[in-house]
Length: 406
Image (cartoon, rainbow, N blue to C red):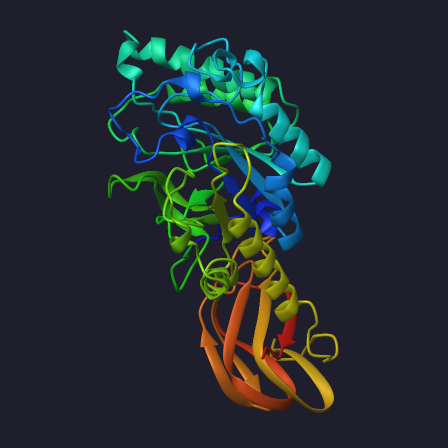
């Protein structure tokens, strides 16, 4: 199979690794409501008087997140910014006497904390039937997206949700042209002209084996149909997940909060399989992140640092005449985890590899990709060798580190 070469911004995306997702809006005020709920939601109740986007972001920043995404408009159609294309927005609520703008506060907070800025926009919405023609809806769609891509500075990532668009036709070429012209360096998630893709589930798990070279895309939990890419392409995957049982904070569900063990396991099965991990937390109706959610993310970040901040002190990797990469020490050192990264500048090459300690195989794997976290029972060894047994052309390892995790 011919190699699929990544773009520079796709490689940057993989380096982000960990992201924060915030579902916030009118739904936070309506307990028991679900996606595509037929019941109306009166926007006059929207008044998050304690809203603090920095408070949302700081625990994720401390945990090592590189980027954050705000839901700007969900399927209900409510806009978290004063959109001139809708009267269903923050501008028509009591919050700040209609002069508030959550998107502004969020983007400002991201930049203050040094996080990449991501905006979520649902192309579909519950009441789109009020638009007489498809062109009318496309005009509304383009108008709102243009506001988001014009009024808030550089946007690093635009996240489209496929739910609700399964049987709807958009003027894709026109929409893409507008978006790319307004933010040419921006990454687009999963639809129409994607740079990155949805992994295909909302559980935070990449498949094993996992590759970033695909020929089609899953785009919605509401259908098994996939979008054909017209050939194999390099397309980094992102694994999104909920910290609780709901995307929005609209239920009393603290008992469903993901445990620290779960989060660590999901990190291994997403970032550790060469994809990105996107963790959602829903701020409450006051505009604050729940204390239990903040504490769990802080615990998660502390545990990642405990495990991976200090590699076992082997020497620098060197390559032998057979193409094996080795790290060595003068005496035997305990090891139970190896993290490998392949240099993906020219695409993925490695298809199968082994990890050997003092010439005994302790782990076998397939692709390495951006990052592969390999675990095995603790052994004491002077040498760790990576032996590649199947490739799609020449390869180079970007990094190789060993850890002893207790």
